[in-house]
Each structure stands twice: as structure tokens, then as C-alpha cells.
Image (cartoon, rainbow, N blue to C red; front, side):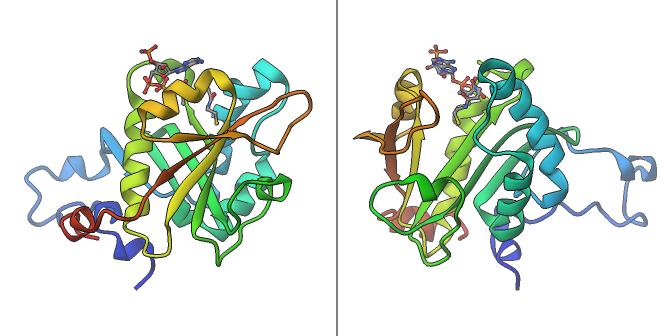
Length: 205
Ligand SMILES: CC(C)(COP(=O)(O)OP(=O)(O)OC[C@H]1O[C@@H](n2cnc3c(N)ncnc32)[C@H](O)[C@@H]1OP(=O)(O)O)[C@@H](O)C(=O)NCCC(=O)NCCS
């Protein structure tokens, strides 16, 4: 069974068979709201959100299009997208890291033996911000990571103004991150995702 197939709440929603369906005309209706791992085919939608969220503000973004494709090819199970009527409205992309703290190499590498998920980017489409979607998606992502037996913690770097947002989502600050991007400096934050045996037993993992 594939990794994705092993995760019950990420299984694709199957339409009822046409014979049993109360209304056959509904077969092509897109779900109002759907969470699923991303695939390389979603890369352009991801980049569109990044372009508006980061490039239009600072001229750069956490992941360029080729890097998005790279991570979605290597570790799609470490991504999660929120789709509304088929349209991507928010996403998170991570990869594995195998050191205590992040370094410059963490920006581009996926280390398959790592026990930490490095969250490269979380972004919500402009028109959907300040509605709780960022917090909800991050919460669901952490639930998803709890179903992956090799993951011990999630780690990220963010600018200081977002520290309260991630703290509210359960992350603790580790201090200044050694990674810099141009003139930008970051705080490194982490969140344990193991030690919730009760939750794993009862979450269908
Ligand atoms: C940061 C982001 C993911 C938050 O998602 P969201 O859906 O807007 O956030 P929520 O509605 O769940 O939570 C709102 C809280 O987020 C925090 N927040 C969101 N954007 C913020 C910003 N630009 N500056 C400071 N705090 C911010 C605030 O604490 C806010 O709480 P408040 O309403 O009490 O002020 C979203 O604003 C976004 O995509 N921004 C652009 C991309 C980005 O900066 N991503 C993070 C770095 S990878």
C-alpha cells in the first residue's frame, strides 16, 4: 500500500457508484472543501500563491517553482493542500531534516533518514487570510505528521512578526536561526509531534 493510502483521512473521496447515486448529474461536482497531499501537478497553483504572498512583497519566495516540483516529487506525503471547489487556497510543504538545528542546506535538501520535518512554507491565498485557515491547515498538517512513524518533530524558521502566530499553533522558539536570506534573519521554532500515543491510537493512523 502506498504511504498516502495508509493515511485514512487523506484517502481520496470516492464518488458513489452511478447506479447507487441519488443524482447522477452530481458526479462531476467538486468537493466544497478538501485536504490532500500535493503532487507535482499542483506546483503551479502553489507557486501562484507564493508569487502573491512573497514575491510581490519582497521579490523572493521560500521555494521557487523547480524547488516546489523537487519536494513534491521527493516527499509528497510531507505536503498538504486545502482545496475549495477544486481550487488551492492554502498549502504547506515540508521535507525531512536530520540535524538538531536548521542550516543553509536545509533550504534545498530532503534527508530521507531525518526525524524532523522542516516546514519550508505555509501560505494562504490572499483572499482567504485572517479566517483561521492558516491555523487550521497547520493543525491538520501536524495531525497528519503524527501518523508518520518516523517523524519526531516539526521545525521551521520565520520572521519575528510571525513568532506569535506559530506559538499559538503550538511551536516553541529555539532562538535565532543560523540561516539568513539576503538581509532577512529568522527565528527557529519547533513542535514535538511524537509522544501522543493516545492520539495516534485513536486517530486511525
Ligand atoms: C501567515 C499566514 C499563513 C497566516 O494564515 P491566516 O489564515 O491568515 O491566519 P489565521 O487566520 O489562521 O490566523 C490569524 C493570526 O495570524 C497572525 N498573522 C497572520 N498574518 C500575520 C502577519 N502578516 N503579521 C503578524 N501576524 C500575522 C495573527 O496572529 C493573526 O491573529 P489575529 O487575527 O488575532 O491578529 C498567512 O497570513 C499567509 O499566507 N501569509 C503570507 C505568507 C507567509 O508569510 N507565510 C508564513 C511564512 S512561510
